[in-house]
Amino acid sequence: MDIRTQKLEQQRQIMEQKMKQKRMTSGMIQASDVRLPSAKLRTTSGTRRELHGYDGPLQYTMGRENGNPDQVMSIMHDNDETFVEDLQNRNASDLLDIEDEESSPIAVTTPMNNGNNSADARRSSNALVEGQMNNIGGELEGDVHGNIERFVTQPAQQKVLYKCRITRDRKGMDRGFYPTYFLHLEKDYGKKVFLLAARKRKKSATSNYLISTDPTDLSRNADSYVGKLRSNLLGTQFTIFDNGVSPRKSNIKEGILPRQELAAVVYDTNVLGFKGPRKMTVIIPGMTVEQQRVNIYPQDETEGLIESWKAKNLDNLIELHNKTPIWNEDTQSYVLNFLGRVTQASVKNFQIVHDSDAEYVVMQFGRVAEDVFTMDYRYPLCALQAFGIALSSFDNKLACE
Image (cartoon, rainbow, N blue to C red):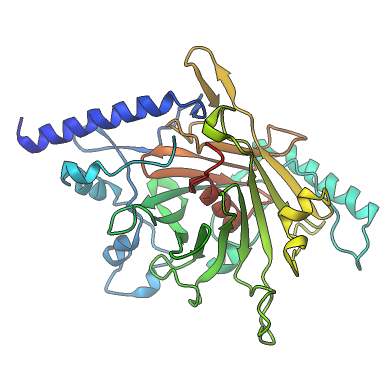
């Protein structure tokens, strides 16, 4: 056995020990069903190797044909095994840097109607969503249609499940603290379509993630900028905005829209993890009878999603929660059934449901490799909302664990 092989074997054992230690954490959630080990690939030698986060800008330069930049946004990738081989050839010291921070039935409210609530619209909207709940078994797998910028902000089609994966790129001078996240829609035969990228902004008082439809340009002034995720100081409350302008800016030009609040996430405080797994509340705008999202344009902080929810003003809002995991005596751990889409234990793993029916999973998210996560979503969420909710799970939370 050569020195390189010995180092890789030592690193593998270290990683296994770390995963065992993580599973002992009180807030860990494991998958109770791992029938589809999607985080693995079988190589030509017959062995299985884990996928890692190689969906970053490098793949877009390698994947272009004849240098055509127009192919960047729609390229589908089936060369993950090449990246895995590259990973295996890296120095063992590079692999040591894997520490993590881990220690619908929708009750739709009424659409706007000249400023007045409509009881008829409320009944119609609720009936519409109840019909959606009863057709989960016949749903299709989602695909991208039309313009990417429009697709990521439009609510999911009813009876369609959008299966995605998020890869985290932590390689580089400062990406240990400011990793880049890439969202892809999964396709058949291991192929995928790029949707969104995000990175935490530097020199920001609170966590602030910029979200873009361009994997190589994550700047606020770029045309590809579609929204952002912002947290409070403790990292317990997050708000997802679109790319509109803040109402606090007095120099808003004519024709430029003010920003909308697309979603908010509130984590229960759980110092040192004594209360078990995370508990989170997701607040999103309600849906109209035409299955369109109600526009929320707060003029100040008191009109935002979180403040409205705290004041129990839920008109035109939908309140969701993460599904409570079940304690498994055999494994001595909390478990959720992710139907094979999640394969590793993590405090980040969650499913989002409405209290009226916990079987309709609006969104689920979980780990399949050290830097690879699956993210699936349904109506009424859009890709941007779901991605923002997932990003909030990555962020450090001083008062949550």
